[in-house]
Every structure is written in C-alpha cells, then in structure tokens.
Length: 207
Image 1 (spheres, rainbow, N blue to C red):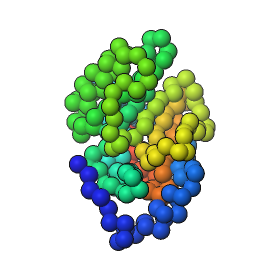
Image 2 (cartoon, one colour):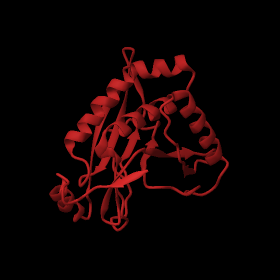
Image 3 (cartoon, helix red, strand yellow):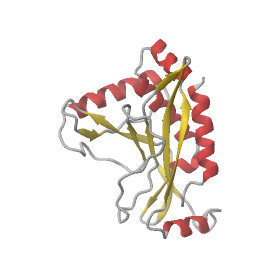
C-alpha cells in the first residue's frame, strides 16, 4: 500500500525540486559498523549473519519515513512497507537479483530469505522475477573491507531506491566490524535522515 504526498504542502517541496533536476541526485556515505554483539546473537539464534543484519537493516529502513519515499512519474509516494532486493551469488559466480519480503519476525524472515536464496541459485540471468519499487537495493561484498563505495547507475533511469552495501567483516581484539555503504536520493533523504538511520541500525545490532 502507498499514498501520494501533496507536493504543495510538503516541507521538502523545494529540496525535492532542486535535487531531482540533477543528473546524479544520489549521495552516499561509508561508515564502520560494530557487529560484535550481532554476530554472536545470530549464531545463538541459529540464523545466518547475512539474514540477521539484512533483517536489522529492514527494521531500521521501515522505521524512518523518508526511507519509505519513492518517486513514481515525478510524484512522491510513501509506502507502508519496504522490502529488499539483495544480490545472490550462484555456484558459477554469477549473481541474480532477489526479492526478500520484509517480516518483523526474524524466524519468519529467515524462512523467506532461505527460500528466496535457493530459488535464485537455481535460476539463471540477472533479473529473476518481477519487482515493485518499494525496495532497497542490497548487496554484500564479504571479500572486501572497503573504505568507499560507488554504484553502476544509468542517470536516465528513474531510480529512487536507497542502496545499502556491506563489506568484509574483520576482527580486532575480539571486536568485529564491517564497512557499510548507504546511498540515497537527495530529493527524498538528507544527511540528518541518514544519521538517524545509522544510529538506529547500530542500536539494533547491539540489542
């Protein structure tokens, strides 16, 4: 479900217009996340770490209104729920785009992700199913402890989905950390909202 925002009364009307005119309206940041507690918790619960931090990501995304805004034919809509399209690596080292439906319950979400990963691994090609726009684009690069990140993008394609990426986890004196990249459309999301998302995500990872 979604509702169209009234642009005339929206307090971001000028911001949206200003940044939407740009060839590249996205901006991004790369940070380091403490995942010591979260990694241990995922093992305790018997779920994969990937599923665990994807679930925490979606909880934080769905909790912050600006991350649920999407642009459709130059109008802004607020979605009730945001899901994830995660890249899934196959045995032949190609990958396909998945659709992980959000569920507040971790056990239910784990079953959703497990089933979807199995489906994509048995498929071929890049786009493996139909997608809606109420997504985040999600990727994991567990081979690279990156300090910066960029995305391949067509500036002509009308894209407004946030892009969240995670890198290689490292351990130092029993503390586990990993890089996290966040890219968002500046017509919908500002630095304040990104900071809000990061703070909430880290809090969830520490819970």
